Figure 1 (cartoon, rainbow, N blue to C red):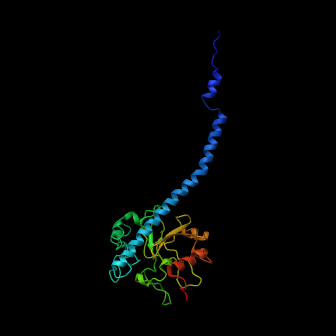
Figure 2: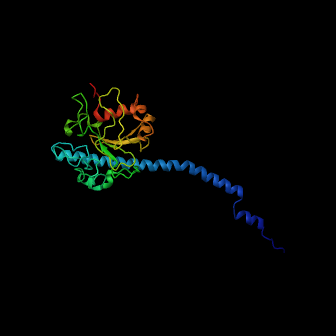
Length: 272
């Protein structure tokens, strides 16, 4: 009776991959990675956008509670440290001057009147998509008790109390903002148009406060009724302006995003 010897070649084939099989597996893995990585990246960005919207919602609730506790008065949208009457600033960075050692620090945020209302949470003031060294990623609209615009129309002036705001669901309060590299903090209230009553309007770009496009080619913002939205830009020039690759002269003509910002800041019928 003969004993059958095992087939060593068969054992070798069953124990590993051929070069062709290995290349096929690598190709499949590479294909799957190319499909899944953009989805994972998009999911991460969506998570950051949602977190940012939550931050803005929390700050807006603090802004509303301040008005409720202060006879309907809005806190100042500016960032001054030395203005005590008649309003107070929501943060107190002050002006960019050699003697200013508080601007851009956590203390400037803590000295703002919204600090206690915001739960004393420093993270609430910083967007996760903001890769700059700034501690604060948001500004308040100039229309919400900021400095008066140099306009000839009497109806174009900042709101001083919450009850003055008509159509609160259409009036922007907090917004994603950014600054030029090297700037230590976002200065002043937010107004991205050169002159609010210009027809047609023109973008205004500031080194210390500017529009951003860090969330899916758009920006997050809140409104005076407390709700939040993502504003996705429809004109690619707006993104280029936010990234400072073009200037206001090129980005302004017939830009629907600029027209919407004017409406969000001051409302429809601002020139009537």
